[in-house]
Length: 106
Picture 1 (cartoon, helix red, strand yellow):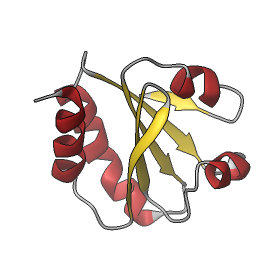
Picture 2: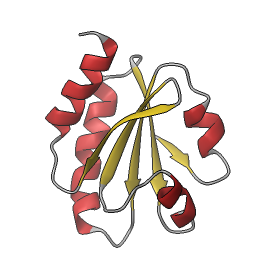
Picture 3: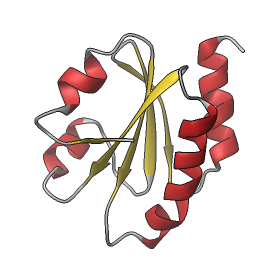
């Protein structure tokens, strides 16, 4: 999973053609730590179909605010650089996968 920050986010995510999932997290968020392995599994399952990145909120709070991330953990799904769906707090990897597969047409 690509580590993203305020300097790399726009070029990596907003300029990307296709589906890109971004996991917004923090080292102090226990739920984020619990979800991380599930997101990494999802990345393996969707390899070649969607790109994945993660943003640590430490040092990137303004980016999170700009992207309207108001709680953690949050996984945001982008398609062709546009935010299409966000999953916050209580969600499952299966819900995220279903949304991505819907965007991919299957």
